Length: 345
Image 1: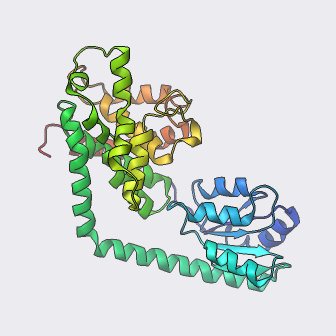
Image 2: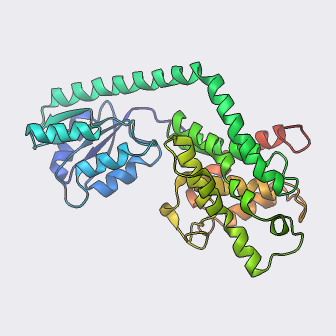
Image 3: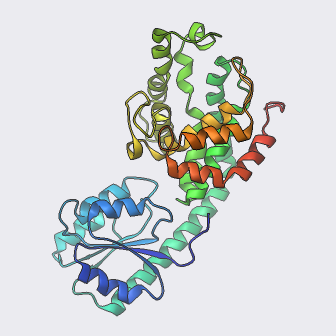
């Protein structure tokens, strides 16, 4: 996907006049996105490409600015986007509350154009510096990260060994997930989390008996219900944890068999109710399963596998992610070739 050319500023205010004023100040240097309510602001913050900074009104009907800030700062996908409150609420306690929620600054209404330009420029510069610092920290701790990832991958493969000759499945599908996540451009940190957490998606198979897991024939209804419980077993095995990787791994283990139309399991989630990492894993997991030899089937061709995924966009899979998957297919096929089942893990 094409990266953005100019920094993106999201302006959130329930007054179109206020939006027009701020947009007029910034539009020549930045790409402006706007939202007139908190719900829309949150949706834009998660969209591709993400805003680099948010100018956020506090007093709005429905979800107010404080709530918007709280939601964004609670999620690693959006928490680092700087938020500046633009508001007529100028009491000290209001400012303290906003800063405690994670905002980086306050601008009072009516706005002064020079102040708006200066504050935006300053906080974008700080944001870019922090991103560069994060990059350097990741580089300096690469050995530790690689060791941690290796441990997680081995745990993930422990479940796959029970599932009879799935070979390099965990390694391939986690790389597929990384490629898809990276194309969404939510930042290197989030992409790394998806890549690191994805191998744990089927860890719950450890809790399924070999009689069911290795049965060569079609499962009966009782057996199929038990097989479905591997999602819940996986979430239980990983458990509640402060680690961002394990939090996401638990989320993926529980919900990677949910379907876009709500017909999946275990909770019948649909569309955006399904966590984004789980939607990514769903595509990567199915593509690798289809194109791999299994005891109960030969490998499908890439063409037939892609055709099935396209056919199920909007039912099984998130249609927008299917488009991303297809756009990244050349890179995905390189991974498929590199980590083929003929190679030694």
